[in-house]
Amino acid sequence: MNKLFKNDVYIKLGIILVGLLLYFVGFYFKEFSPSGSQSDFKAFVFKNIQFFRDDLISSIQNYGKLGDANYPFFYIFHAYLNPFSYDPDTYLFSTFSIGLLTFFFFFLSLKNLNFKQIDALTLSSLLLYLPWFSGRAFWGTASNLAWFFFLISILIFIKFKELGSNDNILKKIKITFLLCLFSSLTLYVKPIFIFFVIYIIYYNFINKKFIYLRSIFSFYLFFSIPIFLLIFYWGGIYDHTNSSIVNDIFNYKNILNNIPIIFSYFFFYLWPFFILILILEKKKDIIDFLKIFLIFFITLIILDFSNNLNYLKEYKLGGGAFIKLGYYLNDKYNIIFFTSSSFGFCFVVNYLKEKFLNNLGVIVLVLIFFGIPKFLYQDYFEPLIIILAFTKILNSNFNINSEKKNFLRLILIYGFFFFLYNQILFFN
Image 1 (cartoon, one colour):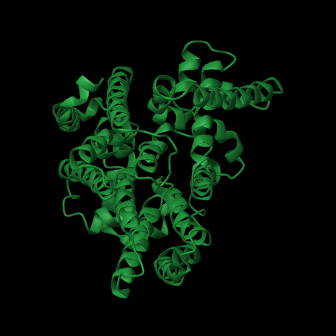
Image 2 (cartoon, rainbow, N blue to C red):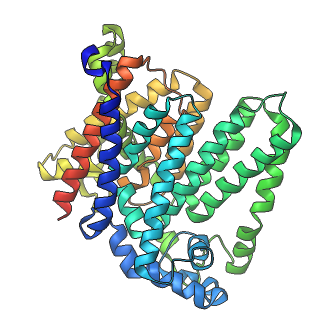
């Protein structure tokens, strides 16, 4: 392994260039991209942008009829701030460019965390290998813009965490204002990102940065004025008069049902860490890991035999790769899914071993807000878990030295390249 990575700069450059090539070629052949975004774009996304451009007031008044469970800001942004949204082709090229900028802001975030420039570029190029991230950029749906604003928020949050007593007051106010602004914009595109807004407040509480809380609350109160106006106008958090889509799909009662599925997604996107544990960690660490696995796995088996997990056997939409793999292999006891979910739970427990309060807050907020949908699609978590893990929003206790990082980087890229390739084959 030492010989393999002695001059690994060429491997890293190859990973970056292949990622960019896949992204550009994928856009040219976007009809083959494995993403539900294509059908959304053709059914309502581009049409709704034109509705908003033609008549903003009427579009807001009848928003529930437009078939989108998100808030109107996505359409307002593209109708009035995107000069390329008049034509479908130029619009899609603009969202393709937003995807590239998202990759760039991920790179800047990693670079600000003291990654070497080549390493930051290599890891950020991982986004370009992800089929649903690329598919949303190719077809210009709301998530594409949400990830863009979210990664700007992450970059600013990294700078916010670095603020010290020696920084002048204007710098502190400026960074705090920008953090609240871009996290609010993310929320206005996809309401599910309220988890990050709450986390920012939570982070300041647990780290006793009370000096910033007054400014944060003031800025968030100001940025919340549009949503309060919408709630007052609609008579609720959504235009329920014209649509029942939110009530039909989103309910807090779904959270418990979705927890095993979310753990499965954690394993799917962090499985290279499992390989590291098996190959490079101490025997005691492996035994501890497997103990946690067995406890949760047995718990799932007991719940299944008591008929509390029957919904997993008839999960028609979403559920992720492992639950679908079990269906195809006729795994009537869901052993494949229970295994992936149990390994995902192990990762969550490992995160909780370091900076417990911080990681507990992140994980609980993700479980709550991403667990509300009736059907939990894997693309909701792509690239959420990767971003949280590599930007240290989730603090890992894995002891990864330089050699391990190179190994991790390679199996991550190769793994998701294989995933992208198979998704394209399956979709077509």
